[in-house]
Length: 370
Image (tube, rainbow, N blue to C red):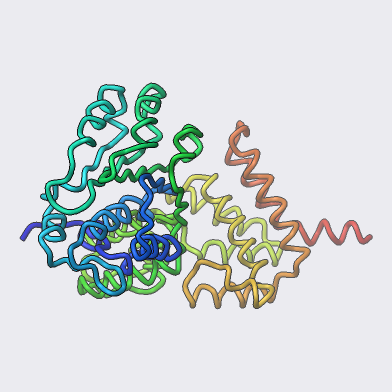
């Protein structure tokens, strides 16, 4: 059997199966319900959040012959079957990154004039539309403003600011959200269950966090980890494969800072460097750790942590031993170190000095009091 990557295998086929974009899918369904279809849409947002997927679902649904009561495609009529089998002549996808010239757009304009052989609408999905040249944009303007009644354009982009205002004014704009870690985690649990993979929640949380708001990235990383670990995924395997610094390092270092143990902190940093981690990556993680400890000082802000339950409990426990003044000073030191890291000539010494300063927070405070 042919192997299909999870990002394709579990690509949503209905509005209800799209994760994290409920405001957009409900608006599109209402537009279908009220028969208020615009002639041009602009879908913008980060990579891997469902822009092209929603465009394809929308195109399939408006051409469906038997739309359900909740305004989803039936997946049974000839139009839906042809779409699902990638043989539909109603939906045309163009990659503007590689088809960005005036000639490409003129060819598209000629194609737009031809009515669909089946269904009501010909839908033209133009991906990465910001890559079109200024001349191509200008050639596209008139057709975008007054297309034939059967034509609908859906433009997708990750860089909305590069779109000409004259194009923006002719489109209904939908801004897609980054996928939250919690939403990505729940979907990874679902995929793991479907694939028969046993995974620790902390392991999936790291994958969801590493994806940085992109569901497609989360599924790609998940496939990578499954190839490495097999049908059982542990937290340790994930951090080893993704080269992620273990939370334990930051918890141990914070304990050493509270004990004013400079030597221990420097030895742990040496171990981190020997494991192949970059100093800027480490100091960024240290800043995030202090930020999370500060959030855990209040039960209301503790929910802002994008970590698993067991790790959150560790943060809550350690935050009890860190007063706010210590955390403010620690954040000041780490953020300053992070800002100056690129310009520092001796980068190792630069980070080591920050660690020494962190270990001396209480000593310096005592000096000021005296």
